[in-house]
Length: 114
Image 1 (spheres, rainbow, N blue to C red):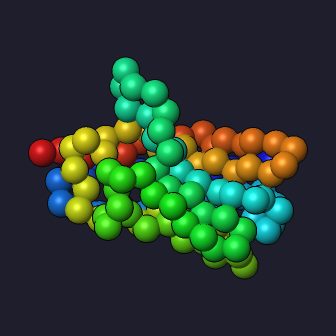
Image 2 (cartoon, rainbow, N blue to C red):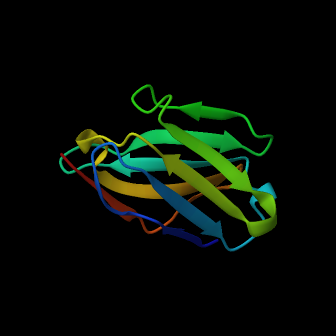
């Protein structure tokens, strides 16, 4: 399984970015897909997740600002990030889980300037 993440970049505080994660196979095959992030010197943390049934969950720090969604026809999961803050700066990783595996994308850098 390959997960190709894209959409990161440099943005000013208050701005928006949309991350995309394209899977090499149908995303119906994954129980859960999600986005994690890791800032320098910190542990990787869950940002948002979405189940095969469409149920979503978010870290408290991003609720109301970030939205995770999926396009099954395109085998793609998105993370719309609005009202970005400097503390959102991190490498963002796409993740997909099945009962038999846990898969990671290569990461995309998001930098929010103040």
